[in-house]
Amino acid sequence: MTKILIVEDNDMNLDMLSRRLVRKGFEIVTARDGQAGIEQADAEMPDIILMDMSLPVLDGWQATRAIKGKASTSAIPVIALTAHAMETDRKNAMDAGCDAFHTKPIDLIALVDQIKQLIPG
Image 1 (cartoon, rainbow, N blue to C red):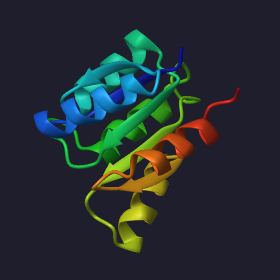
Image 2: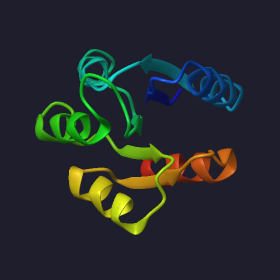
Image 3: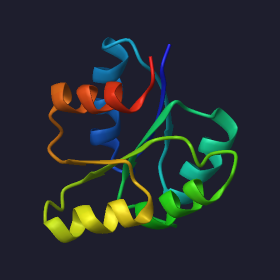
Image 4: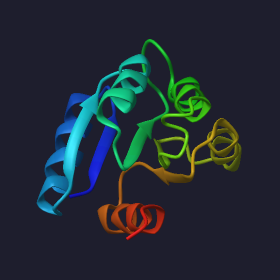
């Protein structure tokens, strides 16, 4: 089963996305801020990370840089989740190390397609 780490501080978004992805057959682990996201990536070694960019403690850009900067977690794909849809937002996310970019509100079909493209097998 594919394990997804969702790093999201908004309870409603986290609950909705978690439930929808569980129904699609994914295992879900969560973190509520960027620092906890780094710690969960280390502890859980998820297959992929869905990273909100606007997070407390460390933002999604800082957390992604930290995850991608560690040998143990650098290969984990990260999809940026953000309400900011400008091209500069996409570029900033990719520059931080994100492998893909998805704007909110989340299009679940498109997100699942992105997940499948980034996870081998």
